[in-house]
Image (tube, rainbow, N blue to C red):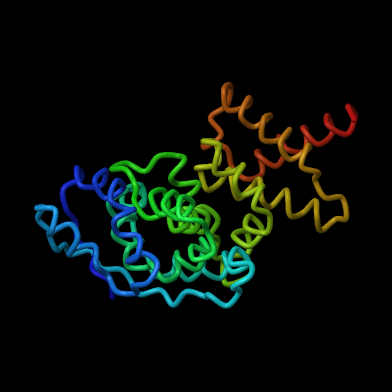
Length: 251
């Protein structure tokens, strides 16, 4: 088990500015050294009652680490039994990221990068602000994978409930576009969208990138007149069918 200790939020910004000084630790050490660093800066490190499971990350594809995103999203989601409030807490992800340095080093291919790129990726992928921003949720590997699995997990799905997680992670552009839009932060909306996207592909009539983005724009506009969160999957499917008919007629 991993204990998620905490410290003064003020320290988060200081940790970002000290990445260049700690670069060798990020590149070489596999142990958890963040508490030691925080204590050395004069801040109290406070143990908490929050424990999460260890994650045995899949690091089998050295040439293409993103190919393991699906398996690692599942592993991470199963290990973290956390609330949405904790999932939005930058302190939590900062501490957890420093427990998972070997995986993040692998995922970002840190040792293959130039020094300035290494520093930038560490600053934005290991250390987060007090309240996780949309950019951090989208670009930070751990919060990104957890959020995708959290939004898409459905016990009735294939792959032990992670069938829609696999669908979303099958296309990095699709995943990025979904995480960029507030309407998809609701599980019913994102699941309905992904089922429609997957069904179209299965029927031999996959949605093009242009049509996918058009549907996202349509749902964004629809949210101005409808509370999408109050609609069920059937209603959302009907709206998406209307868009499909309109798009086919227009194109």
